[in-house]
Image (cartoon, rainbow, N blue to C red; front, side):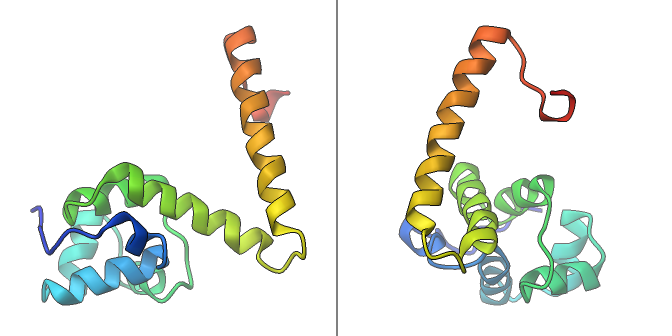
Length: 124
């Protein structure tokens, strides 16, 4: 079951946490927690924790949520990963420098991946 509650413009998605977005859309669509949880293949208690920001979902859940609520998958995934990074570094004084270093590392990883054909963090 796909639900088109309403389109969330990119700038609004970036100002909310993943759980807040899902809860707001669920409530606007007057959908019970159990119905959304069933589509996402989650226990209702797990979805409730995600909505409250007490637990992070996996990528698969994010993608299913985008499908369920007719959201742009790339936007929601970008917001999700951005939230994960923010949770790690938000207390650091040099957040901007950390993000710049991460951006540079990503470019390095892409170059290395292209040159070597595969990049595996687990077997380095």
